[in-house]
Length: 114
Image 1 (tube, rainbow, N blue to C red):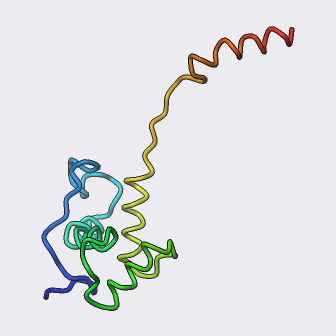
Image 2: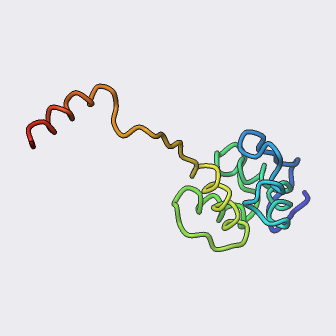
Image 3: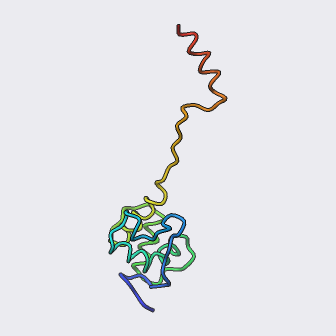
C-alpha cells in the first residue's frame, strides 16, 4: 500500500470534462496542487462518493469532512475544496432579462404606471 500525504495512492486522476488541457494549464491550480490532484485525486473522488472504504485515520477524516461540510483542516482537504468550488462554481449567464411568457405581463404592468 503506497501512501501519499496519508492517502492510498491509486492510478492518476484526470478530469477531462472540466479540465481538457489538464490541471496544470487550467490556471486554477499551482504546479504543486496540480501534481497532487493528479496523484491522489482519484482516491479523493472515490472516498467522497463512497466508492472505496477509508484505509486509515486520514482518509476517515477526509470522508467526515466531505459528508458533514466541516471546514478543511489539512492541505489535501483544502485542495479538494478548491477543486470542488472550481468545478461546481461555473454558471451559465444569459443576456435575457425575462422569459418570453412574462413579457406580456410586464408590458401590461408598465402601461398602468403612465
